Image: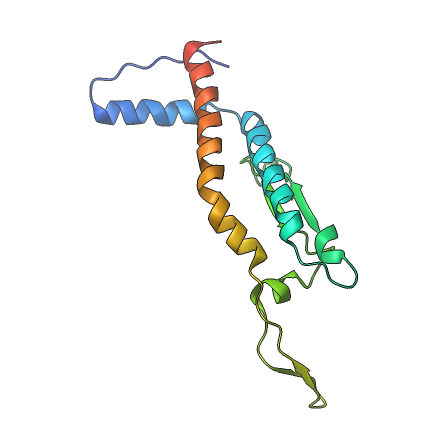
Length: 146
């Protein structure tokens, strides 16, 4: 990485220098931080996931990191239920209203379970705090030149 130099005369200059510093952090440095938190979330989600007759909903609980490409240059990580494994996850999470098929046969109501959103709401402050702390350590390491 290049040498980092910060000289602040006022708040605007300081903010500009911090933005410059943030741009110098490589996505490859951020990816492990985000992957770790995604894996932690997936581990918490697994026992809260309803176990249906096939078990596909639980099998679909994963944490993954999409590749960094020219089209998607930012580092990211995701956790949740993979739709390829459990395409019915939205029915369980959000529920359904009364349903009828084309012939008019009643297919019932699926009550909402909100197992992903409720966990996300409760865990998000801690996840963000840990990510910010880890990024601050990377910035401090860059700032000190180590």
